[in-house]
Length: 187
Image (cartoon, rainbow, N blue to C red; front, side, top):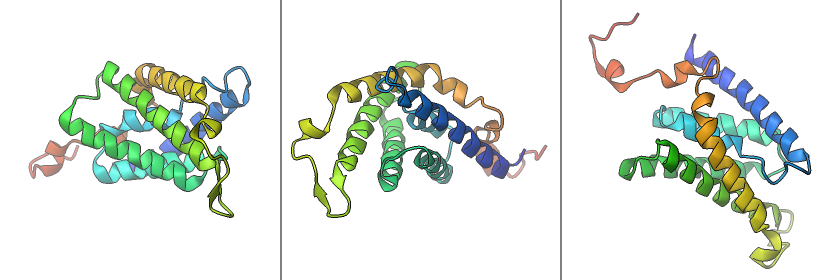
């Protein structure tokens, strides 16, 4: 399977997963406890991707989320890009690919992005002024907390399964040693 087809399949999987996330979030019962699938996908894929591929993954995941949300598109793109950038930097100083650190990083990332997206929703884009003056007025802390916990749990449980979706394996199969060796087999 070609890598181009794998990127297309990632877009299809993202669209389905974000549609399910939107369906769960539309239910009053599950609205606050819906995990952010984009964070789970990006953290699961990021450790296996090179920098250019991580940028493609951010663009694909952002495009799929933008299709199913009313959040500001640029805020989604910036939020996911910042998450991947911080994850790359954190991997240089700490091991965040194990279960507990990944759950904690996903939870903190979800809390930060939920707060950021709530803030961007509170801005009146036509006039450029904030609608809500105080952070407590525009930010529901219980929603941020539930989103962080749900996303952290999903990153620990669902994250390892996401990279095993059909068609995704060619994205994570490239290694630096086979790419740099002139004697590597092309089988």
